[in-house]
Length: 184
Picture 1: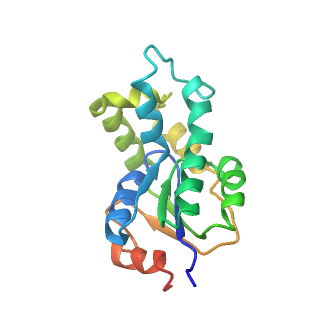
Picture 2: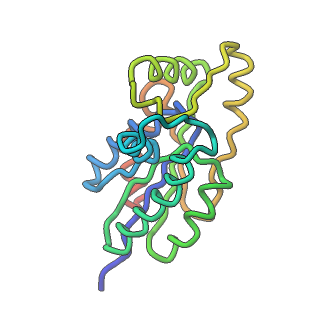
């Protein structure tokens, strides 16, 4: 009898270190990482002149594509790391149908608001593919901190862990992999 694959969900506000951790976890576990932003950035190549915004054409196409890819992989029995800055209102409806296909585990990435603001500024400057996203950063760190702390994390009745990415990973990668592998 074959057991279900795992779906490791990395959630948290933009700039919280989710994508970096997703790829490290995928390498450590030996599975693919499916990242919402990378799907959208890939769509930019076939959509010249796109104007990013919360309800832009690519955002609207990315959401179902992301969950369809996850469903396809899970139906094939592929353990998968899924990463997105979705809040609960987007994560939960997309994950509910996947619960019968996978053992879902959630990693909540958190980080200090000042560190996240600096990461997001650097990423906008260094990565031209970020043009796919409607990232507007408030230059007032206090105002940014308010919006950062208002993030509504995914809420499912599944095993979960919080990882602080402000300075590395706390808990460490070894402990996170143990959690992912179901030995928590």
